[in-house]
Length: 311
Image 1 (cartoon, one colour):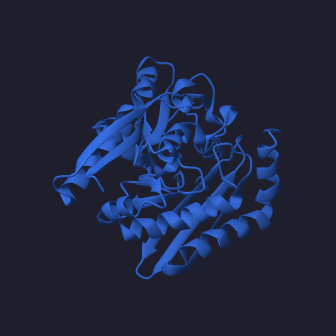
Image 2 (image 1 turned 135 degrees about the vertical axis):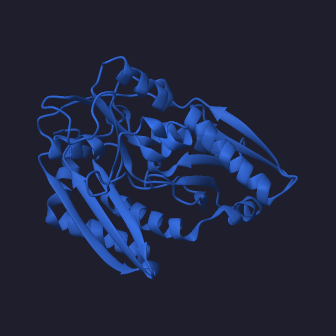
């Protein structure tokens, strides 16, 4: 290693915060290391007028970052793991998973104190099919509208009166110093989080032993275990932004408890189940839970969504 690390990152304020956080962690454990940021505008950032599902899913936010890694223009890329598709390109791996922040979704509203207190017909903005499905399932009376953009853009539209409420990731709000906007932190039973929500992951070339050695001190083993279970669940389901998929793993001593959900975008159909087993079997537990939901009937639903036949 030359003592330099180049970090590919999206240009949003949250992405830059996460990249700078990783840079500071690296310098703290490797004094003298020189870390630079390579901000990249991704296709997902450029397309703001349509839902992610309509334009190709989560990969739109990371494809350009991965291209920079594979071309050798960057050494690592920093991601919110909830934005990462279940499968990575050949040659790239998650070299470190940082300790998980609060994985819950946050309810935000200028006028209403809680999700339950929203009046009939209230307008809730979100671009996430996972959130749309669960919101509609819990409250069919609500009007769910598309709300895209970075955190500040979404809050601005909320404050302008375009929506009565929105739901955003607690971790992102707190990282931006916007935790004061949260009216209610929704429990995983109220709103099951996205796979990997609250986890910052560092992607790098699998063959770069020097980079992997630099990243090793940032790895958080308990977070990795939970992440692997959730990502194995999504991988078996073929999960992407086109599919309302959610999963949440917790550790209890040597055991891992995983809950998973697959829903229809209209919220009419929800398949949910849980599984518990040895934490060392995280990946096989995730796969087994996915198989259970597929057997229960989630397969045809996912296939219809994948074919674009919709709701």
